[in-house]
Length: 176
Image 1 (cartoon, rainbow, N blue to C red):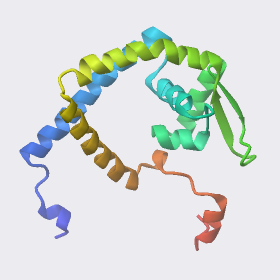
Image 2 (cartoon, rainbow, N blue to C red; image 1 turned 180 degrees about the vertical axis):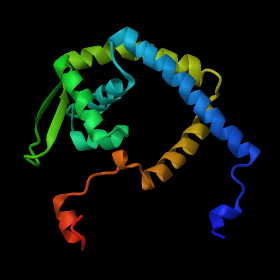
Image 3 (cartoon, rainbow, N blue to C red; image 1 turned 90 degrees about the horizontal axis):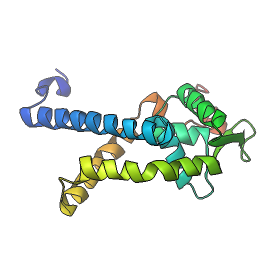
Image 4 (cartoon, rainbow, N blue to C red; image 1 turned 90 degrees about the vertical axis):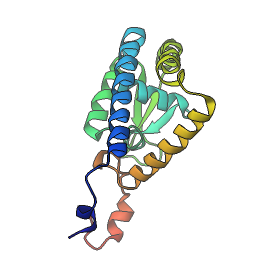
């Protein structure tokens, strides 16, 4: 019998932790999405993309970096970036590093939308997520979630896996 089959499915503490995480995540995301729609007519993914770009020193990222960072399918990301581009919030260009790559850059209009949605976004996070916690709780939660995130990033879903470079594919025996 494999080792995984010898363990019980989940003990009550593990199950409680899992359900609490799912419920907290769902409640928070619902309210955040509502706030983003009302304040900036943005979806949660669009906000993630704009915030990621706004955080970059030059306001730009390659599409593959964006997909890997926000854990979104590449085709879904292309669609979302297209919507943001049509709204004038981002601009796409050919990557200076690789002519096949695409770079996305937040525009001044995109920065203005971020400036408009951030105060409400922070207020929602403070009220729903941070208010019941003390500083020590937040530090502990941050450490725990970072450890889980880092573990999950070692075995990411396909949409979150970094793309291998052409040179790396050539170096593998199958060429895949």
